Amino acid sequence: MAEIWLKLLKQNLEAKGPKKVSEEIGYSTATLNLCKNGKYAKTKAVAARVMALYGNNGKVECPVLGDITPQKCADHHGHAKTVGLRVGNPDTMRLHKTCLQCPVRGGQANDDR
Image (cartoon, rainbow, N blue to C red; front, side, top):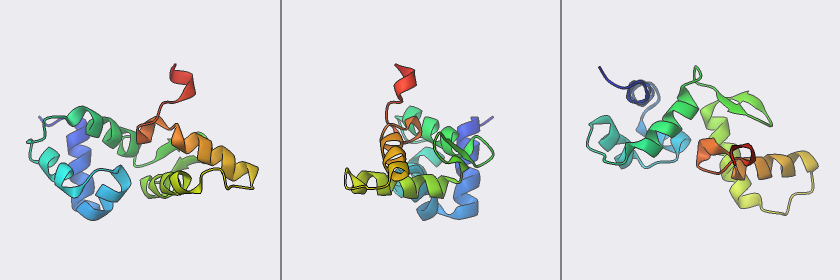
């Protein structure tokens, strides 16, 4: 029986298409295709990202925004990387700092240390 993360990955690839899933997860479509076909050697990081994004009924638990969609998570993370310290709004700054440390996207959360 397939692992849960692989099943979730395949379901989302069929439902949304590889380009959309690649954008949400942050891995290339080639990597996702290799994972789907069981030919990618380093699946641990991909599996963790898939479970974080799709394992909670398709919602991501954001400490700032609450439960959000994987696409919204990807959008905010992409924005947080480009905004830098040019933010004037305290709420946006909090989101920026949290996104950069988010374990869903490969960062280190402060409470995990």
